[in-house]
Amino acid sequence: MYSIFTFAYWVSKGHLVFDYFTYIFVLGACARSPSLSTLWLGREVHVKAFKSGFMSNLLVETTLIHLYANNKDVLSARRVFDEMTERSSATWNAMIRGYTSQQERAKKCCREALVLFRDMLNGVLGRLLLILPWFCVLSACSQLGELYSGACVHGFIEKTICRPEDDVFIGTGLVDMYAKSGLALHGRGKEALELLDAMGDFGIKPNPATFTSLLFACCHAGLTEEGLKLFQNTRSRFSIKPHIQHYGCIVDLLGRAGYLNEAYDFIIEMPIKPDAILWRSLSSACNVHGDLAMAEKVGKILLRLKPSKNSLHVTVTIEDYIALSNVYASAGRWRQVETVRKKMKSKRVETRPGGSFIQTISEST
Image 1 (tube, rainbow, N blue to C red):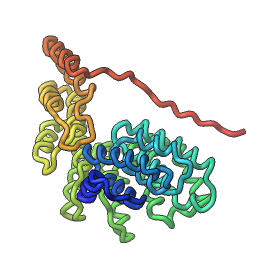
Image 2: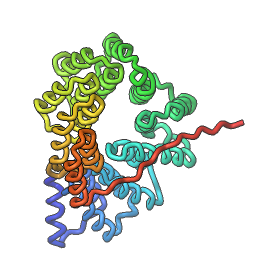
Image 3: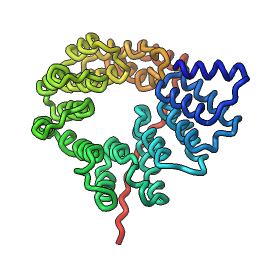
Image 4: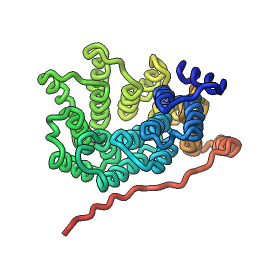
């Protein structure tokens, strides 16, 4: 951050002439410190680079894509990408990785990542294939639940690049993709947990992503005790500090089992600030189990949430208002329903039209 403000200071003086290396370093600093303020500064640097004639430089443009993607402005990142006359492997990596890293609108962004990957293959040959973001592509297939597309990518990798077992990142991506379509989602959580012991037998240490997948498997298999024990082991046995995703899995795990009070206490006692996703998970569980009192409590908390400092995410969504309104409607409390609806109108919260994805598979004859 210091380098960013130093650059801004000397720009204001107007006495120095900067080369493209300066813009690469400053844009890179903005990309590594995502926030509303750095996004604003990054846009200012973008304008300055354009006026200085450096937007034809491949490295400046690629770093700019990193900046926008890391700051969740994927539309601006794609605009820069589309305007480029030349692209390197790092450029393709930056754009595809940017799509797959978006938590909001994840499905749509993952779809765009796969479309971009397809377009890339139509025009990319040779050595570039060796250094493409295969892990991100497999992650997109995993998040979309597209087992067929993931299997096609798997086959392409084996036929044209390498054996997956020779590349730990590609191998891990394949395991994650198949596991999310197989063991975890089909209730075979115990088999997924057995893989943790198998990793130890081969001398491979699990990382935070490993525990996210395992806790996800416990949630879908209803392995409440096993999931809680696994969560405790992340720190005590494997010396891994739990991330917000791990806490979210435990809230989901307890909520699915009907332990709503325990899930609420777990969120309250978390050493890190809970986000809206955790509260929405508990709210959904309350609706499933018919606990209207807890659903009302959680719904009110959601509507009171405010974005943290420099947050890039919208905390309260239309779904949060509708969920609380439905709670009141289920209890016949129509006056409260009207109050929530009026609040939506006063804050100009509009409903979004529904949508769906349809996967089509074409077979060659």
